Length: 497
Image (cartoon, rainbow, N blue to C red):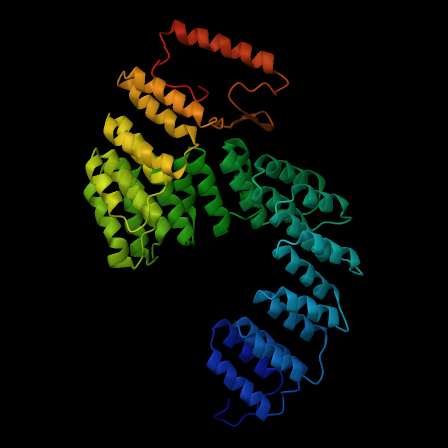
């Protein structure tokens, strides 16, 4: 265009500036800025606004503000762009100062300053500004709802949702995503049922992904299957994110074959798709299949990342392929330029320990470039128990106590090692040490799907309305087990001891 002496206009330059911003092309953007000055578009509001977005998008907020101050005419979009620039670069004070000076504020600008305070974790100021906002619309309510959700205030976003006179897909996704973000997975399923039952709003791919993730966490296979059928009816099974969610849900509910079926049905696969199926196969003991899929992944041109190698190392560990696992570990840095993290080192420790190479595992830990964490030492403690290596178990516990002295689970595991070796004096000594920590092992939470709901319970839980009937059935089952010859292992130390 320049070579043919065609002069740009006020619509040409902003398009080029947007491209420069996306490509992080600072030098080229500065050249466009120079052209704008030479061609007389420096004072054009549209061009100036795009220059503000270009400079602030590249982290040069001071230069963006210089453009802003040099603009002859500024509209609400220009003010919003400059305030956005400050927010994006972490300067909320300057953003609020400029907001207070703005001669005109529309609902977009108000919503942006509300969301900025919510992102900073200041929900008190966000709510105050929301209450001052004139002409609130649906976007404003969704902004505040998401602010409460992202800051862990479940009652806050529930209250906002309840008070909304109208709701769209972003409102429902805000509610469902808020529950998911805060670990309220039972409520995720409840909100989704309400959405289907009570509203005319149709779930989209983002809704289904959140619901499938909740099904995976709860092990709610039946509801997950229903969501799969719903996705098929609504035409969402061609969406790569939904398919990834389906694979993960089936894998975590134990149906890895269904995960494979979903994977094979996908026309498009991204890195998450490959990682999900590889890790699913590895965790469920299909190590050979995981390694085969890894070969297909490389042949397809998809580059593996750190998560891929967690699955590969896990597969090798389950199959006892020590040499192959170590080769894959070394290939991370040598072939794929991936720097191993603590998780990968932990997988190698598990690989060696499972293979009975405890001395090599401890030597590997000693040479690690970072300090071993509790996960690594717990893996070694567990392996020491399996291979009845008391000296390694004691060393592992010593390290675990240094990391977290008050975690009674560590004492429980070593006590089991002593119990299996019939070292009852050591068991008693550990019980005393465990008591002296002053802490108790946090009971594990289980969940079960009954009819149309998910029920959560602890060991010796008595909160359920049918507690008496449940324990009566449990006593009956215990008698049947004893009649069939079952005997409890007395060497196991109960978690509550």
